Structures are given as C-alpha cells and as structure tokens.
Length: 333
Image: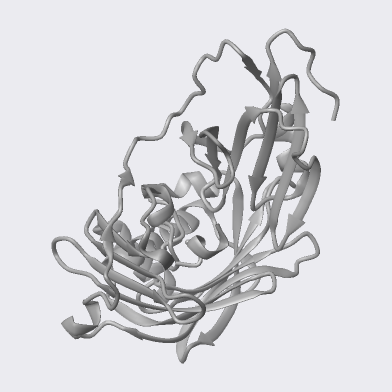
C-alpha cells in the first residue's frame, strides 16, 4: 500500500483563488469559509490544469523513495508519467482516463480510480466542502520549496478523529509542492515534497514516453455509494462523523483464498477501510500502528473485522465497534 501510494471548479473560482492568494493573509490567521473554499478549489484545479515536471520524495515512517513526475496539461486529455527512482522499477502512465502500469514481474493489478486520482500533488478533492466540514484552515506564512515561493497552510481537524496536515502551495499557480501529515504529537509521519520542479513551459514529448513496457490496467470506475446497503448479517450504527462512504465491494487480498468485503470511507484528505471476512484464529488481533497508519482487528461473532486508515487509534476502533453481527449486542469498546 505504501509503495502504491507513493506514486499513491475552474473558471471564475480559479481566478478568484488567484486573487485571494495574491493578497497574502495575516500569519497564523484562520481563513474564513469563503477564502478556505477558494484555496481548496484552486489547489485541486492546479494539479490538473498546470503543466509541471520534477522529482519528489515520499517519506513514510522509515521508508523514503524518490519519484519523477511529468504532467502536461492540454485542452483535451492531460498526460502524466511517473517513475520510481529508488528500488524496483515501477512506472505509471496516464492519458486522460486511460491508465497503464509497469510493476515488478510484469503483472498488472486492477486499480481504483479514486486511488489513482489522489497521487501527489493532486491530493485535494473536487468538492471543497468534503474537506472543510472536517478541518479549519490556518495561514502559517511563506517559505521556499525546491526554489519556488509558497504559502503554508495548516488544516486543523475539528475533532480528535483525524490528524492535522500542513501544505505548501505555490504562490503563482496554486500547485501543491509539499504536504505533511502530522501525528498525535505533531510529529511528521508522512511527507511528500518536490526536491526539484519546473512549473509551466513546454514538455519535451520524449519525456512523456514510457521507459518500461507498461500494460493497460483495469480501472474501477464504479461510482461511490452514499449509504450502506441493507445487510442481513450486520447492524451498522454510530459511525464516526465526517467520513463519507465512498465504495462498497469485494477486494482480493494478498494471502487470502477469496476476496473480502470492503467498505471504503474518506474525509476529503484521508481514507479508511473496513474489511470483513470469516474469522481466522491465526489472525493477529488488537491495535497496530506504523507511521500514521493504524490497524485494528477484532473478532465479531464468526467474523474478523479489520479497520485500517491514516487516522488515530480511537477512530479505527470506533469504526470497528460500529459493526455488529445481527442478533448480537453491540460490543463495549
């Protein structure tokens, strides 16, 4: 998951956002709702509409990798190529909605459109409210990243169910140049940052040509579900607030003989997964954490529930205990 992730309203609003950032707010000041909406919209748009190329670093716990990205914004379908610079060679190539991959061993696995569309620096959703219902936005100050001037913004959670985030936004275009997810002690637990970047200009078409023999990847374009389906085997109540149900389905898992039930939730910045499968006595139970990723597994009747996400421990536990097999009393946390 960490490897994958390391790759893991235009018009008037864009122009309004540009004017907003031209007039720098006061340091350490909370943005009002209108300005926060314009900021999120501007940053989300820039990742699609700005031509850029460079090298960025992804640090997650003790893992650190570098990637090259080339993104050409056109009037039609934009084109993007990414390749790993560390470890086994991997490559991601996208033209419009068509995605091709090169992975070690030459195998290609199905990918979810939501996952492929959240690759750095495209980490904001198209709907600003999805983020701003859960986070306050505070302007921190200015700083250079990879030789470019940026404005720094903190996204401060409105509750204890999620982690704070900090973003460095290019002052001229709104392109995100650095992002940091902070842990419970405000320590960096995940970092994306350009070490070198060129914004604008013309892309040499040869740089957009895949280096490795990429293969078309099956892409799941199924729309998200806004409500959980009625399940004859489960009662689901008291889910933590601020998370939307994005997808319900079955997902193949490494080491599992058959796909497991998968419920995917998101709060606009991070995602959280609930996996349901027959109980395995050999499965490890309880809490585990690694670099901002928290996993909680427990036995619920004849089932194993595993919840995983970039959220604090109390959040994955709350999601787990919201799922109760039919006929059983809700479990005490």
